[in-house]
Length: 150
Image (cartoon, rainbow, N blue to C red; front, side, top):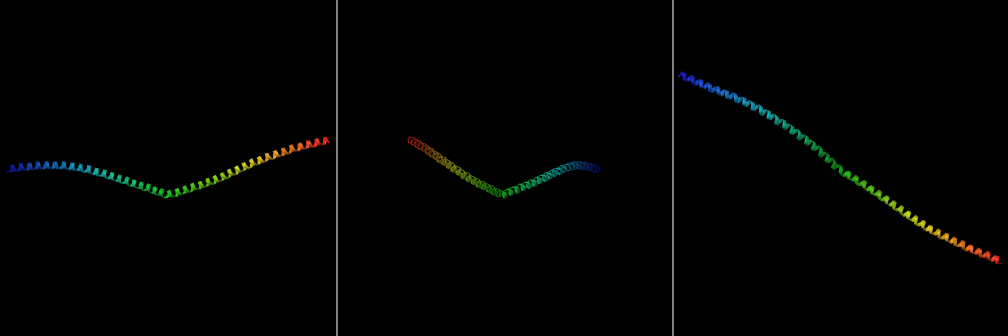
């Protein structure tokens, strides 16, 4: 009976040793898996932090760009009005210059017509003077001929 008990105790000790060995192996594997999981959690947390930072940066950049768009939208009507005012002023100036040029052209045309009419009158007067000179010469010749005949 003692031998049986000793054999059972030895078998129990052997089973206990096997369980302890398995438990130690399981602990090492668990510890290794736990370390691996902790590393993976740390990596995921780092990725999450980086993603959050990138998201915040993108949001800040987008907010800045949106602010720029709103600023441009605000200034656009003012710039457009200023451009339209400049365009209207330039059109008015061009119209005034065109009117001045037209008046100058009209004055030049009137002066040309006046000069042409004056030239015609001058030529007509010159022709009358020549005709009168010719008539005077003929009369003088007749008068001299009549005196010579007397």
